[in-house]
Length: 615
Image 1 (cartoon, one colour):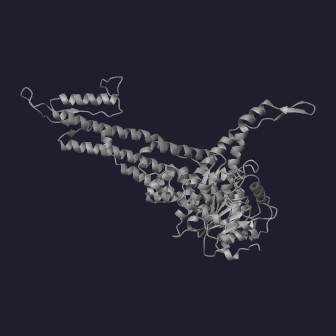
Image 2 (cartoon, rainbow, N blue to C red):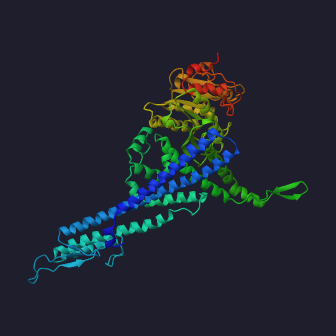
Image 3 (tube, rainbow, N blue to C red):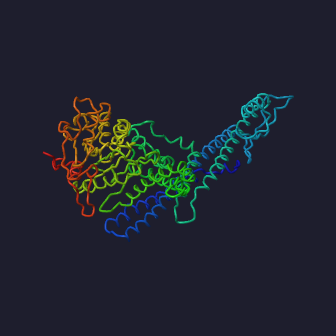
């Protein structure tokens, strides 16, 4: 880029282009939402069968195309805004330098050189003549002699100052300074152009109608490239407060302009999706981007693992041994293969919940948290908690992880189906909260307090975030539901801080780290418990109480106690299910709820007088 080009440049034109891409992205996002939430969901409400399932698959593919378009347009928007930001900074430098030149009666040539008039004390009877100088920019090679052990720019600056000081025409030094400013502005604009031109060229999709897993991984790479290039532009956007409360996060988000919100969401979806207090629809969109990109990445990595070789070789009659090829494969690949397969299974379960929207009236799903690393995390809501009158947050227990989340999601869809008819004219949201690392082994892990104690603060913050982002003007009626070890986490959350729930329900609880319902930080009479026939976990909890005072079930009371004990003080709800996992039994086909589930539903919608209690 040269001086003449920069002089005529209009950064606003790039901002206008960015606005156009943002409009296209918004339209694509709306089309995606319409396909998923209105068209596909509407078909699910009124139709069933293989034809509907096939149609929903096709609609999902089309929605994916629009989603990808939305994501890429957001990246292009941020890239163009950043380019405009850098070009405007360069243009402002240029305009200020030219203005200063004109004020001092200097002339700026078409090549950016600066001509200055004669001035100064007479030498040999003559006023020192004027002249023309050409500037140089820092960061640009210079032909000035420099000390090889020093900094080139510092050396050049020193030489220029020396030359200006000894020059008989005082205009010389002023002209050089202005010329350097002009050269620097041109250099900065050239650097911006050379940086962003190749980045913008990469922000394009394949010429087809199929958004493949490679397209999604490219989108992830594109975002990284734009993020690194747009650092200065993004630094001007206020970032969320470090370790901020949900209320702090909500205040920060509201303080941003619409464009700043769009830029932050495009550049930092994984971070934004984790922030409690941010609106549910914003977190959902951010986490869906993360889900799509992670799902594609994991599938590519899984596909790259070599096929499992023959496991055994015959050594003789009835004698076999592992092959060396299989042993090598086993040590190098099997663990990673199982991890990737498990994570992908969980991601498929989340997508399956998205696809079920509309079936039997099931509302839109919101992905309020997602992380595929380690055991995985996921927070899935049925219905928008920001607009809900009643919200239930369910914490699963031992052996829960991302690969097994389908069952936990199903339990909360069942609870929604059971609760929603009980609250006519009101909105219900039921949430699966796998926001902690649950113990994975009943014998070796489930007796330890660390899992609950570590996860409890995150649970408290999440519930606080529900209240911070609720749009009803008043807090939603919140019920915390803990199954098995999940009840221990809720007890720890109440013991460690402000639980901020209105009701608590335990199902199959082995103990909750406190000795009475009154210690659970909810109004008196709002702690409920279910203990089904054939559920061994509460008795195991009682056994742990008596056998090990250091176990995570122990509390300061003199006698061991669990929520199923009368002395604990919880309402003991009737159950008609059996075993440890039947508390959420529901016949979707006939829309028939078990009494165990119906009791929970009545608590969730605040119909406490309808709950059946054991005498």
